[in-house]
Amino acid sequence: MGSISARRLAKEYKELNSDECPVGIKLLQADDFETWIIAIEVLGETLYKDEKFALKFRFDPQYPISSPAVQFVVDEKYQAPLHPHVYSNGHICASILGEGWSPVLSVPAVCVTLQSMLASCKKKERPEGNDRYVRFAPDNPKKTKFMYDDDTV
Amino acid sequence: MDTAALLKSVSDPSDFPDEKSAPGLRSLDHALRCNICGEFFDGPVTLPCGHGFCSLCIREHMRQESNCPMCRVAAPESSLRKNIAMEEAIAAWTSARPLVLRLVSDEKKSITEREANPSTTPSNAVNGKKRKWSSEGTFTTQEAGPSKVQKEKPAGDSRKNSGQSPKSPIRVDERDDEVEMVNTSDIEEADAVDPVVNCPMCAKSVLESRINPHIDSGCKIFLASKGQNVNNWLKIFPGRAKGKEKQTDDTSNDVEPDRLPKASYGVLKEKKLREMLQEHKLPTTGDKATLIARHQRWIMIYNANLDRAAKQRKTNNELRADLARWEETRSFKKDQVSDGVAYQEAHKNEFNQMIKDARKRLVKKETPEKSRSTTTHAAPSTSGPSNVVAGGDDDNVADSQDES
Image 1 (cartoon, helix red, strand yellow):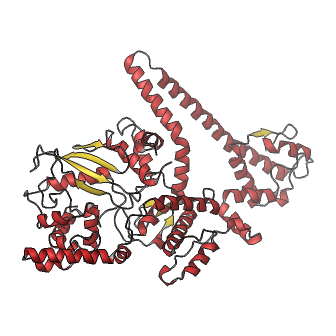
Image 2 (image 1 turned 180 degrees about the vertical axis):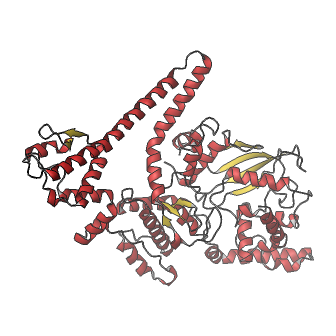
Image 3 (image 1 turned 60 degrees about the vertical axis):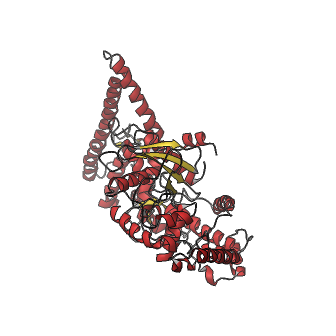
């Protein structure tokens, strides 16, 4: 049987490897149901034309009730896109990854949303306070979001 | 858990071909699945907005937010209503699914075969013929029904005329209109399974299953007795039957068990908690947090179980086994921080030390942003770094919400 989160992820795995996978999204690595790496590119005439990025998804056993931890991969091969919602360490400030998460969302849905976030960008720049944030940011971007939520409620 | 095995074991709408080659099948399979777990609805419930989920899935979601995950319209847990029609549709679809999958793959094979040698069109022709045959079959049985009924009516009329005849089977006076109506509809209803035959003695139409009692009675009894007719009516209108049964014998089977109320754990003493667990024959080991979590989970799975149809419901013992399994998986990730405030409390000293260190560092640097450093940067939980990102973050979130 397997847990709900593993079964649900197995279905998403199938979708990402099927003809239903959205364009510009490709599953690079999914050895288990804890961490996935997904390649993402933005198609069409955008500021990120011909750029390739990688997203890292981390799932906990409560997925999909709890959101996955999603960030851009920053290593020798990949960089985080220059975008007002993306910190240079790859952390993303998007409502759907935090308080806007809904259990009906999925890995492909998150990828598509981030694609459109990049596609609609008008000016390539880092978010305000990037350096400060990156210096002290926790490893898991979900924690940042949590603090923020906690602060404003 | 073996990934490959799991991938094989999960079923999915994509088991069916795409919309072009098999219109509707994928979307049908998708429509009967919960958008949270991706499985067929287990104890389907509907929210006020009309969206539906598994009872347990939506209850888990509602522990965090009381809204619909699809449209975010507010919906308290008390507003959940079970969806019986959906559950029946799923039961039917899950039993039909393997056959449909087989037919679909057969169809695919025959298409590729036909494409390979287009001169022969074998399987499709056979299929077409079969369908015709079966439809003819049902057509004739449908014809049989009304015609037989009509045959009986004039017979009854003639009986009225020649009431004295020894062969005239039924005491005409006793048959009021209602009973006659019951009889005719009885024939129609029974037709599907019970063919009508002509009695060799009186040549009247009689249901095959009744022919022996009919002959034994000297061709007096045609159909069921009045009492049986009432029962047949009740078969057609089960609602009334239920009501009647409830009046006569109030058996425990019909009584819908009550849902368990939620408890306000904050005001409960540990002893009371243990009593509450004992009441449901649940283990009473562990600290207060464990007891609360266990009781909460029990209420959730117990109430979700009631949203299943009575036949599909698990027994309390099965639920207890589920609860034990859930606790096992839960204890795995005990080192994760679930309660930020408690964590902060427990590690207060460490945090204070870090705050001190951070302050010292800042003083040395003499940064202009001194005011921001009142709380810690390095603390891994709650309020700390929020100060750091709050400013920029605020705008960002507003932006991203606009987009989505």
